[in-house]
Amino acid sequence: MSENKIHTENMFLYYSEKMALNNISITIPEKKVTAFIGPSGCGKSTFLRSLNRMNDLIDGVKIEGKVMIDGVNIYDKNIDVVNLRKKVGMVFQKSNPFAKSIYENIAYGPKINGVNDKSHLDEIVETALKNAAIWEEVKDRLGDSALGLSGGQQQRLCIARTLAVNPEIVLMDEPASALDPLSTAKIEELIVQLKEKYTIVIVTHNMQQAARISDNTAFFYLGELIEHDKTKKIFTNPDKKQTEDYITGRFG
Image (cartoon, rainbow, N blue to C red):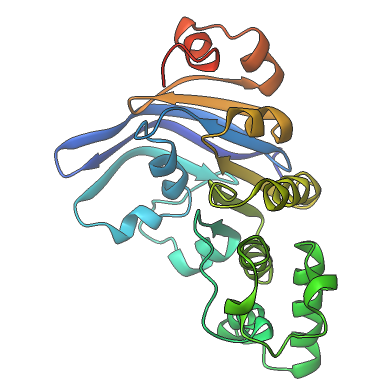
């Protein structure tokens, strides 16, 4: 297993004729937290979604260059996108639990993948909820609707739902931006724990958050990757003036 989990080379993305990502080459290491920062509309979420082909769902999207995961180009013709999305899970900005019970939210993915044995499902549900640090809060009400949970609990439930199908990579698109400070702290703590088992890539508009939880940080601006390095270096001694200007608040 290579320690470099994700690697893109000369990757361009177009919405019809408009270039949204310009020549992105980056290597993302395994079992680390990599944060993408940059002002709104700079391409960081578009790039994140290209790592599990979520952009396929948008008409007119065209991708050039290589997007490699474990040495395989995920845009090859013979790639099974369903399997890819099982391996590369996604947590969105707005928690989106299904209008089902807490238990059924977590069991949904494994069931689709052919797990029907009740005791096996029970085990998967418990493990996923524990891994998402929410088991203690919900274990006595697994039959209740997930929509009755608080915003922060719903987001951790969505993380548990992603973990239930046993991904290797978890993509997170501003997972705490809609949450209060206490829930945000819980999500951050959770992300740091999860990197023991998973490769985490997070888009955040909160630079303090990137500084607190990530090992590596990539700064995007106007569809370009300006700089990518260890988080400490990016925040204390960046190579590029643009990065420094953004981090010190001169623009953005």
